[in-house]
Length: 88
Image (cartoon, rainbow, N blue to C red; front, side, top):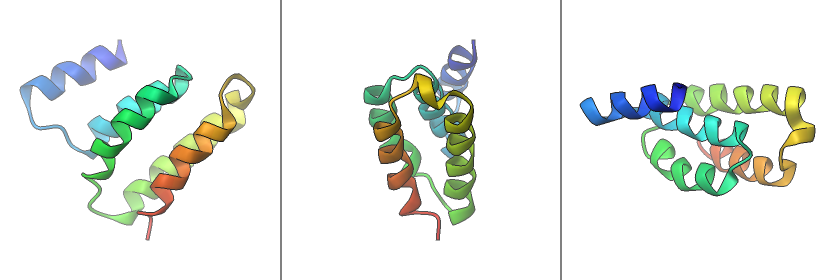
């Protein structure tokens, strides 16, 4: 449902960072790190302030602490590592 809503919004208007990163976070929740990686570049290209990446890193760490045993921790660290480059 959330994916559908974001995708519909993105069809109507130019996607922003929050639209793109929401799709990354949903892919992480689905343990679909191929999709998360594919979408991550689009999100990163829209980062305009370091706090945006910091917020997402915090969200991903919360997911990791709650459902980490059901996801690929190494690939999650790859996603977080890419975001950390932009959190200045």
